[in-house]
Length: 188
Image 1 (cartoon, rainbow, N blue to C red):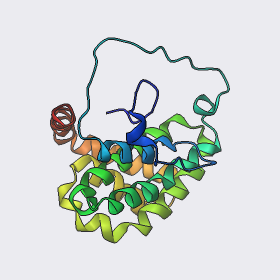
Image 2: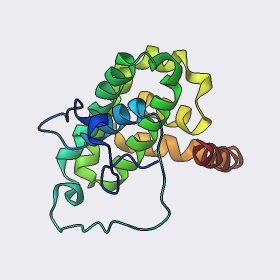
Image 3: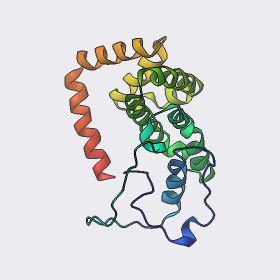
Image 4: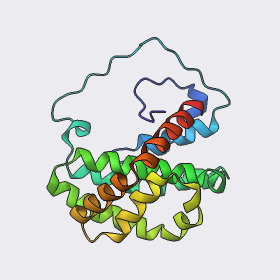
């Protein structure tokens, strides 16, 4: 499910005490997580009721160093999950989503910014190494590979080489798992 807030409507009483992380981009991730946890029900509409307009050189289309803010989203998301007492139960999903989105984010950036993003991402994965290892075998192979490749690589270039080699080597497992993951996401 997309966590961006465009295209979503919330009841005022549901979100009146939820605050955005000021001065950051990607502040909608922890905001949406908290709203999702608090909601008793949700409705999905198949009709398109919203047309998003992207401006050239906006924050979300610039793909500059402000994207490094995303690496810290895990901290805020963990805090929300802990506050509502669901962190342990949802830890594998939270870290899978985080690892997946980091991979997506890094691919949007220029090479110069990827180098910086990778460094910050590796620092964060190192900080959470013990927590991720606790749930390591609950993660899909894809996320185990991304996590391991990050920790074992000295820089972004070696990360890409290692990750791509492992995906090619295990391509059948990779594609089978992608199908399983997509059906899992659709089910939930």
